[in-house]
Length: 225
Image 1: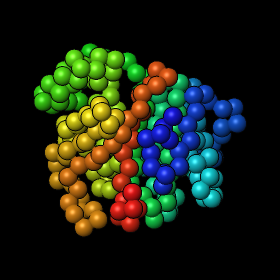
Image 2: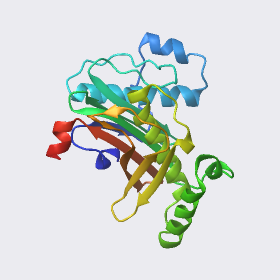
Image 3: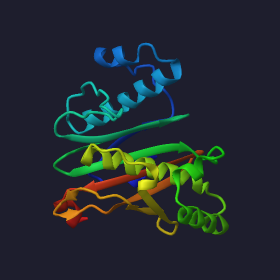
């Protein structure tokens, strides 16, 4: 599912089940041994997906341990992202020679709980979503906004090692192209010779799920694309 919104430079593996053959490295197992079954399943299958993707690009699978903010710490030479929600797990990886950063998120396609939209959005974003609901009522735009901001954070953190709050980015959706833009409300890093002021992402909806993705290619690939 997720591969439809990613460039060819990124390798993706996703699953709608928890495969019985999915296992962890001992150092990963030690981190999750006391977790409840749900958490163990999503952690294990997410990393299983990541290792399948690593194999596909000829990289030896290895442990993927969490960093200070829980982010996956990828082996040298790789970037990637992992996501999970009820009924779906996915991971993407790419060589750093081809991709600068990538962030993905999956959510069940249903409204967010009461109060969540107000907590993660600006007033102008809520106005934008209200207009979208009128014109495209079949989409739960509040959940899509939440997912897009999760992808923004996952793409941002590897570049900066800095926290990014929900209000630190403003998202605009473009339904005709199933894309979105995210304007940073904080100072971004220098990237490829320019200040990073935002991200562009894509989304797909199907099978009761919505998935968002952001990819920044290395300059040579971006020019070719």
